[in-house]
Image (cartoon, rainbow, N blue to C red):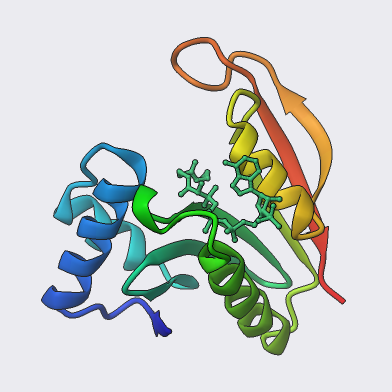
Length: 141
Ligand SMILES: CC(C)(COP(=O)(O)OP(=O)(O)OC[C@H]1O[C@@H](n2cnc3c(N)ncnc32)[C@H](O)[C@@H]1OP(=O)(O)O)[C@@H](O)C(=O)NCCC(=O)NCCS
């Protein structure tokens, strides 16, 4: 497991791009990965089978993406990566973690609930297809 910060190497960007494409079924342009990670407080936690991208601001953090390519799912990989990210954030004195997830993404909602996240709100029409987002949060203990 590796933590990549705001100075990723070209190889790091390639690894992130590859894992993202295999997990989400669409490309994330290299330039856009650079731009996202270059914002201070933004990190990628990854191993060869999955990734989590998150940003920390003061004592709060937001998870942008977590993804595992289909052949490796349901083996606890995302759980392991998320727990490493939470551990890191706890060490940085983060006490609340937020995220948004499509209300139609049942695997992800279940995944986050199992990790202790609760639903704190809903944003109607948040995604471009008019699908709502659930706002979820975890108090870091
Ligand atoms: C959501 C995702 C990251 C889960 O990854 P994973 O490595 O398969 O998750 P884990 O094996 O750690 O699963 C942990 C728990 O999550 C829940 N879960 C995971 N996949 C699930 C599914 N397909 N259906 C229902 N619950 C699911 C279960 O409670 C599971 O615990 P269990 O195995 O004891 O039943 C993965 O399905 C994925 O990459 N999806 C596509 C990208 C995405 O939608 N990301 C989230 C939004 S950014």
